Image (cartoon, rainbow, N blue to C red; front, side, top):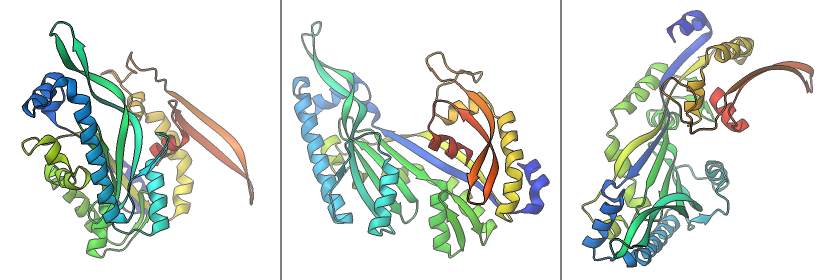
Length: 339
């Protein structure tokens, strides 16, 4: 980065570096293996053969409580999505624009997706039903917020035991809310800042994110998204949090779009030549070996390609150079990586 700043510093107004995408996964550790789940159910007087009925009842109570929370917070209960391929974040953004929500819960959406739960099956050796890990499909709840502190963010909760949870925040959205609180002017487009009135202040606010007490932050969402937690799991059990995805990025704000346009071909070619398969595969959440090559269990293939073509525009023919990294990924994913 120092070399980049040394070379282009005269054309850069400023830069910031910090968290981009952060995704946390929460689990109740004693319930993540069959013996622990059976011990939990036994302590609550639930026989293995009655597990399914108990689990469905808990799921129903959870969904009903969340629907009531959604009605109170934004006026309507959770909205069912028939396809798991729908982009929930785009749906939430569209709904936010249409309704005009500026802070708080945007909405709750539900969708049937794959997940891990348990199934009670008869064990001939033991002579009675035992719980077995079961990979199946069931309803998940998606909560979208424009949080007063963290900005646009989401929570994903599985409605079947053992109630795994996922919380996604964005460091740049978090910064947006922090700048609003200080009154610092800025111009933001999507996930990029195009102008900042005070770069030093912005960097201080990003650095402050590192001092977050993550357990306290994440646990604070549980009363809203899992209102039946105490009734279902008891007061003794809590969530153990791990970082599932973590992205760190640096934004360089140039003096004008014209400057960047002149440099783009050179920068893209440099990215192509210096990029590695390991970085691309990791970005796409694909398994890799320690040496960075694709894992034997993965069917991923990394190809690079440079193309030049003429694009017809209103002002005539425009020469365009494309540098892409192909991994069986969508155009949106590739554009997101380039951004």
